[in-house]
Image (cartoon, rainbow, N blue to C red; front, top):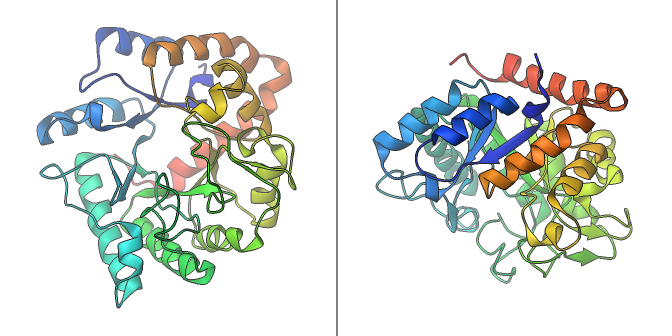
Amino acid sequence: MRREGWLFMIGLEGPRLSPEEEETIRELGLRHFILFRRNLEDRQQTARLVSSLRRYGGFVAVDQEGGPVARLRPPLFPDLPAPLELAGDPDPEGAVARTAALCARHLREYGFNLNLSPVLDLGDEEAPSFLRGRTFGRDPEKVARLGRTYVETFLSEGLLCCAKHFPGLGEARLDPHEDLPVLERLDPAALEPFRAAVDAGVPCVMTTHLLIRELDQRPATFSSSVVTLLRRELSFPGLVLTDDLFMGAVLKKMDLAEAALHAFLAGHDLLLLCQDFRRSAETIRELLPELRSPALKGRVEESLERQEKLFKYCLPAG
């Protein structure tokens, strides 16, 4: 069975699978999906869509951080406080644990099995707009503590989560959705929340479209040095995800297929294509011959083995 399609997580166009999407999913052997507000109308429709996607045997993911980034909104979902608001609670660990448990239980009811949260960048109320409210604050020790609480709570509820945006967007001023942020040096403190999340057993880590010249002349998305930092210095054994490859920070520099291939060669296990289903499918078709080449066989099997381990040991059946 061809499994190269398992290396991608893709977005869909609307609230129902079209015949074209179903045919393409079968043709390309796609397995992993991410849903956005455009896909989520009401409770019954959302549950049906998630159920139809789960039959392909992979992730059905969503960004349900709380606050400014929540794809499911009332009345479909409880109104979750922003992470920065939780961090300001008199009992921040308790507030994070309660909110994470609430989030995980409701996601599980719909059938989701992966939440692309928590955000572990360092940032406060003065953070740039694309990050404001989404973080647990600027204190690395506190962010590490609250991130650990979030991860442990999610896993105890039987749902997977994903720490982001490695190695840390806190000092960036440009929005990766629009352009490529560049930093001269890596702040060692920015790694501490990710280190704590890895120690807590976080199953997935998402990198970011950020260039740190001290580490590499390539953005983290295409940098084997950044992935090696995560694997070796932080001893992370799980899945490394890209952020959406449709973002301006990527597409202003290279085309989509080139970006996906470079991200995979850098060591990412799951390549996110969140917009434009047809263009995503064309990109995957273009890449499949390369991914099926003998030169990449070992690299492909390495990523697929990580996926299989995650599904076998971390997700309950069904």
